[in-house]
Picture 1 (cartoon, rainbow, N blue to C red):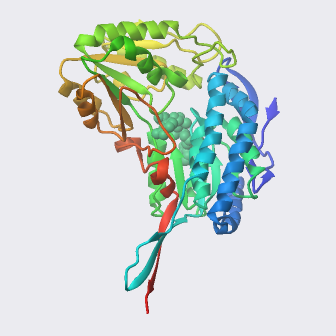
Picture 2: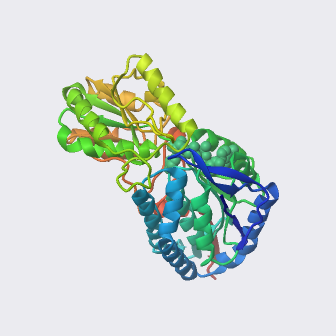
Picture 3: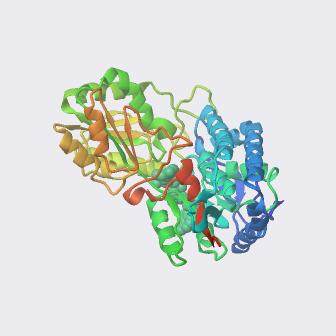
Length: 467
Ligand code: NAD
């Protein structure tokens, strides 16, 4: 069994302790990952602090050149990183490769961004506004898209002149460890460091006095803990948290045309993504047709090992996640919901659950109110649009939402959704230049675009009185 390594201060760090990494497609442990000690977390922060002054002093064009090299290095290593990603996370290899390639492009797109100095002066004073880096950024990531969600943090943080300590999820540490090794070959020592391990390693990093800014993607529960901890130092973390996105399908929606799009907006990555459609409210006029169309989609999708080129959906990431999803379906059915497709574990090794459509679950069932994060979609009928909007806005989340229909009504309904992104006739389309963030318990702050880049900076004003 292979043991992998952390990179701290540009060097391979000693392996003191390890934890097992499992392949969710067969539930077999296939590698050991290093479990960082408190001393190693400290060493990583110290390395990042030491590297910071020189990195921040580089002209932005110098940092841009490094980011482009990062993109090229990632692209060159895409096959190797993607294979590890599929083995530890379960997603189809073609999707893993696409994630790595998107991450490579993210570096080059970020290199094209600017942090211009703004002139705010007048006749009496020369006033400049600069966007300065914080210093050391802790980037803490989840297991569903470990590569792109890390790069969404690394690229803007580095461009802005920060140095970084990355802490990947213990479910999927291997691809991030390899990615960091690859990136460290083209970055100055200490500019990027990685520590792997479970929650306590993340907590040690967040609580470290040498960390100036935390950027976190993960669950609401952990996000709340990080917000409480960083508040002690009056730091404002960037938090991208869970979602329970609703899709409202209006009476004039062309069901046959949208069903496949809607299906994949819910089931991509086996439903394990933050802006997946997690509940559908369909007007009673289109409800039965939509249930039938989604059932047909669910029944024809190919579920299997991500290494099999015919696989469209892989397993869930862990036994824990599978048990949770199965329990939510059982509860919804006990409350009157009807399984029209799937609703069962697959009889094979690994953490597989059949793509599942549940019709008519109770609006206050856990499957509807919580984030299932699995290949299960509840669909509920509604009679009035007001009722659907009220239901859509009825959870503690506010990440994304969508309205589907041909008339302007879809635009009006989307405008009433209380969330960071409202889509019309599509869902979950995220782009480099477009800010993304959640309302309510789905997050604080934004990522992507100019606003996302500014999250890694603090304003610095220089004011000179003209003589
Ligand atoms: P998680 O919160 O359990 O873990 C995320 C990361 O935080 C892991 O690296 C974990 O080790 C670390 N961590 C755990 N406890 C910590 C602590 N006290 N201090 C610091 N770090 C700690 O989340 P997960 O289960 O890995 O990911 C799934 C969740 O992520 C879902 O809720 C999903 O919606 C959310 N997510 C959100 C977005 C978004 O952009 N909004 C994107 C992807 C996933």
